[in-house]
Length: 152
Image 1 (cartoon, rainbow, N blue to C red):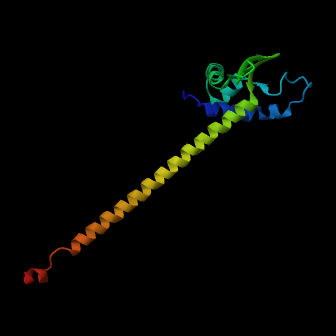
Image 2: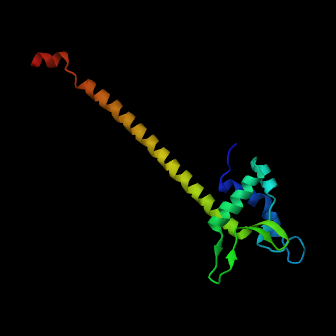
Image 3: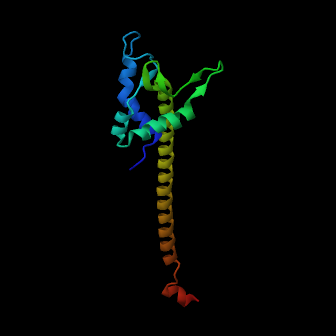
């Protein structure tokens, strides 16, 4: 079984729950908070073809520890909260979106760097091939000819 990356998990959550985040209207009873969107770990795991405990564990034990923080006034800003009002297993959607944008940017930088390196390797290989080919043909012209042997 392949383990999904943080980027894959967050992309999946974003794709599934973005419309829920946008559709929130205070007092409509859909959820208690605009920024904390309840998610179904089984649904996300199903999309990723992994066990739901893998998704929950990554969100609650890893990503919450990595991205949740305490403000100057002492209040906590959770990335993933087990309970927000009556809603359970909630992700801080604006914070998650910011993190997702950063992960996407890192991936893009990685692929741009990799593409530049591959291009440099191709140019170097072509340059080496041309140099070796020219060296081989210039050595042939330096071979003594029959006329040159007579002069000596």
